[in-house]
Image (tube, rainbow, N blue to C red; front, side, top):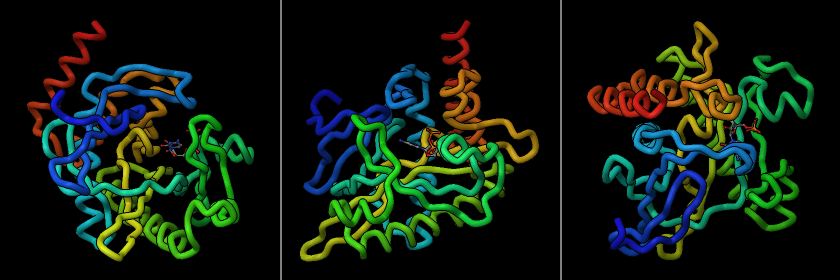
Length: 256
Ligand code: CDP
């Protein structure tokens, strides 16, 4: 690890220079943050689980023709991705009212939306990722009109795919956050899905019990974060069960 050149360290991941030009290694940490970094913690094993969940979803999205930065998983906590220029807009897709939307508009959490809602936030920790309109994106040149079209189109396709994927394992996809980047290949620039998709950036509710299987367990001090993340991985059929047991034991020891 130490031989690698660190490019950037974020809240949940570290980016290192990849083995070839144009590649980057994403290293998934166990750090958890919420409320724009005001709440911090460590969830032992989270990085391992999120690396595997994100690998599974990005590979599946690639298979249905959605361009992504993902190349392959390299180890328990690392994946190789293509270097992209991140578009500074967080894209949130919602199927059911929760979190920020419920607060902002006074809609009870759990109210189904009549159609998927795509929202944009300006990616800025300093400003707390404020909600913006498409007009802001275009006015300030954060993305072009074509890129915004791509982003909205891909975001809705990701939502269709993930809603079905999770429904198949008894989980309701409430909402999630995506990030996109520009991939430069010769003369061409492509809009591709980047970052990660994991329970850190999704709301996932068990269909039968309504139990939260996502970062709200951490945000709202509900406990059992790792058990919930591992349950998502287990239902997706990923992570060898030995790893899950090991992670669970590790977590229990820490708590006990
Ligand atoms: O987190 P909060 O409730 O304030 O924000 P939200 O707008 O309701 O979040 C919608 C979805 O996007 C949730 O699944 C969040 O986990 C995710 N999100 C994220 O991953 N990163 C952010 N900076 C903001 C939202």
